[in-house]
Image (cartoon, rainbow, N blue to C red; front, side, top):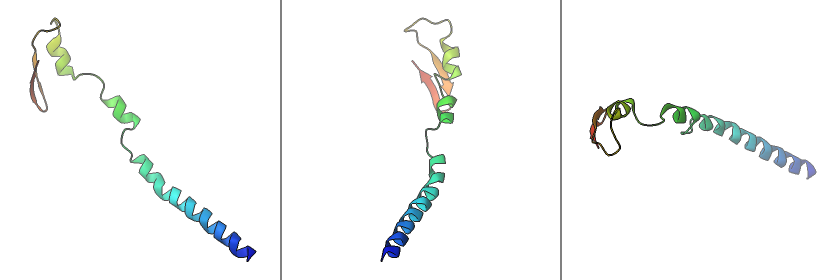
Length: 71
């Protein structure tokens, strides 16, 4: 009966290890990695260019991929 307990413990350890190995690739696919944070920081260049020489509260307009923005 002792050998059955050892065998069961070994099976549980093996199953846990295989589960971790199977889930490891999912961690690489998780969103929000450092590449996402580095890619987009601050306003688009078109907004910066449109605001050059303007004062706070002045109206500006510029084109984006999603259309014209005004403000």
